[in-house]
Amino acid sequence: MRLDPLNEDLFSEKGIHVSVLRLDLIHPKTGGNKWFKLKYNLIAFREEKKKYLVTFGGAYSNHIIATSAAGKENGIETVGIIRGDELNENSNTALQFASGCGMKLFFVSREEYRNIRKISMLPERIYAELRTPYSELFFLPEGGSNALAVKGCEEIVKNTSGDFDFITCAVGTGATLAGISKSLKGDQTAIGISVLDGSGFLEKDISGFNGNRKNFRLFHDYSLGSYAKTNDELDFFCQNFSQKHGIMIEPIYTGKMFYGLYDLIRKDFFKPGSTIVAVHTGGLCRQN
Image (cartoon, rainbow, N blue to C red; front, top):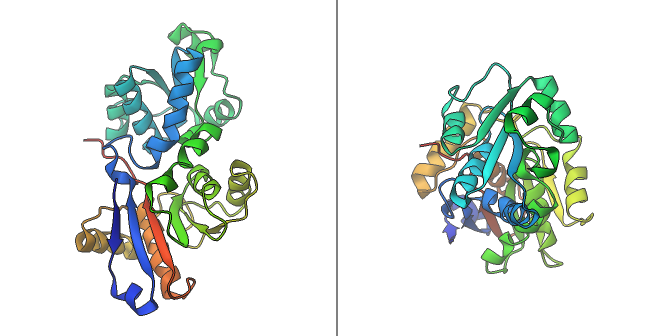
């Protein structure tokens, strides 16, 4: 894992020092923050001697991809409950990849998906097909975000020198930012760039995960209003950044984070002399 300095005229002009923590280099499929979020959940699965690891996601879920790959590598049988009963395992490359890793995929309506996700209780038809009772299932929430995921994300800061003022990352469910904030020293601040419209709940969710620590700031201005939404400006920024620095980013996760970070620096949010670690959480996994 590397901490790469990021050189820009903007940073020199503002007197800001930025480095990129390359979590994207850990593993081609389960790397980034997903590696940390899965780590202790996989350990718990083994210790509890469950038969299936069951999780949830949409048609292009990065979490589904990562979990299926981790299951294949670790000899764990995985089950994916997929939102959208019009889909099947050949609908796109993400689902094809998960199925190819051995994940058993079940496609449910959006209404049924919401109900299943809330109570972690599957319809009888799925139990019948799995031939397994509830007691043999290990449930992992959508996005892999739970207390064990936060515990894993607390270890992210250990991969830095520890000598920084701010550390920033993309925020979906908030577990990664929460874990990072739990590992900070008193004078350090975690900066989250939301990749979805989470202004009504994300701060509360993060505070619940991190024990109500106040050492984080969350910015909602760069989500473009919803998850996976982009525009020409953001797309151009991602392409230019990747070509200039040789670090691949995409407009869903890491692109929005770096775009937001650059804008905050441009607007003098950070004092001159500030040192920032930008966490490359891996973005969307490649399916090929």
